Image (cartoon, rainbow, N blue to C red; front, top):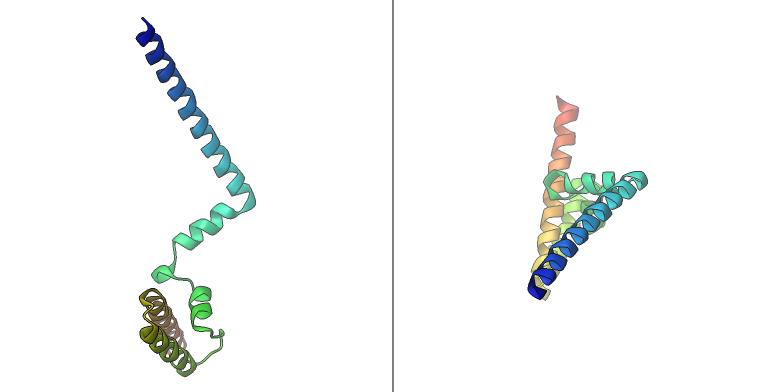
Length: 114
């Protein structure tokens, strides 16, 4: 008899708890959509090549109007520095930033020619 009561309490408690989590999650989504956080999160997850242009430029320390030669100089310096000091993570971030900006630069050049 006592076991049955305990089981009923556990089942009812877990049902109430799960409903409250669902309600809290829905409220969090509503609040995020009102403040624009949801849109920003969606845009950050749907990125070209896994990185935004702003992020790539910040990693390499270049500006929007930087020529490809300057981007390559910054890339070489940062890549070699991280190779010597052994930070594979930073080295890969630098590599991805360079690849992204190269693709972006090639797209701009092809767009102006054609």
